[in-house]
Length: 504
Image (cartoon, rainbow, N blue to C red; front, side, top):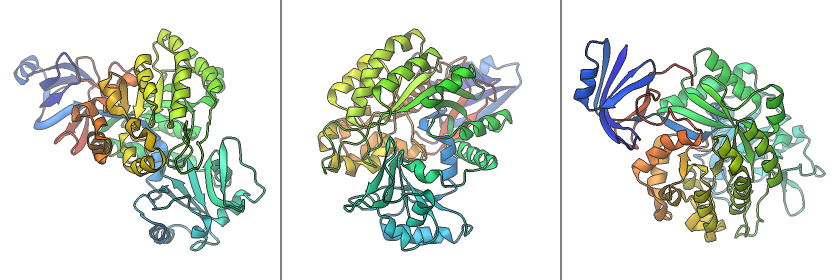
């Protein structure tokens, strides 16, 4: 069966930027052109005509940075992002608790210091007021911090004498007492006290997350580690059952390199799921004040933290590239980005020799000289405009000296960089309308970095495909995958139009 799609087509192909019709068969695009030519080509064949004239057809959207199974889990937990202050959060948490089994941990996700109208981290006492005997764990919007009550601290064995773990911090008050906030690696102290989800729960979370992304109009996602092995296993199970509605490019944590080598795994293997990269964390996040900054934060709260040292990224990055895995490094602060770019300068010859793209994840706050270095190196930059809404107040308060080069995707795109857009879900919503608004308006913040709707679309389609070396994706041209997104207008309502169940 041949599909003939009639629509206003934005192809992302510079040789034919626009078209009126697309012919597809077997999950591949056969031909693209004007309506009369495509109808003539299909004469004599069994054709299913899909008339979407008046609508816009584009390559399927890709979310170039998210955590797919974690997103699925968060869809089943209390969303803290709507709460504007601690009192609202307390009321919402009490209402949520009434719907949960009484012997379980209360879990929520999505709070931030600025979102709650606070000047500093929240305190365990505010949770103790409403739940003195039931463990509570609330995850920050950026997933780099948790806020817990005294009962959770007790179950986790966190007390006055508990030392900060390597790569983490137990936030303490002026009397050196734990406040109930754990940053970065310290989060594991409480997670190890919790019951791990079952295989069935992982599978349901994977199914829920993938289905929601498909509903938003996505055809593919890049899932960037920060999840246990069970998450990837659940996605692979869905794929084996034919239940995965997305193509997935997956990153694995860098500490799994030895295991990958022992199993003989190399980058690029998989069906709808492609094991493509190895993930590193240079620093934390702005929201948790753990992003590594050169000058430090304007409120005197320090310079943030360095997580994976440059020497480790360099050594394991070489190992990853030799196994045909891409190197993807989370870097938020200007100092973190600077150090990662120095490592990438050393890795670039090896990456180029193997045809692999180096990926800088987030690149939120850059020194002006490092903007040019990114362009000179020719690396991929994976960015999330949707985070800007939450970060504007923090940038103005904590990093006023970097306001012109924070979220500088406009300069990067106009300079010719490969920029791939994502959401970092569940850190932020993957609703494409939100990404579109953030990228094209920036909510009035440093509007010199605004981009056009078509530039936004390119970063969510072709740019995302280029970042992982998918020549067959993010473009409407003969031979490419027949994965599309259908729009009433660009940045408006989107829905998937996907004809492929074939493998990568």
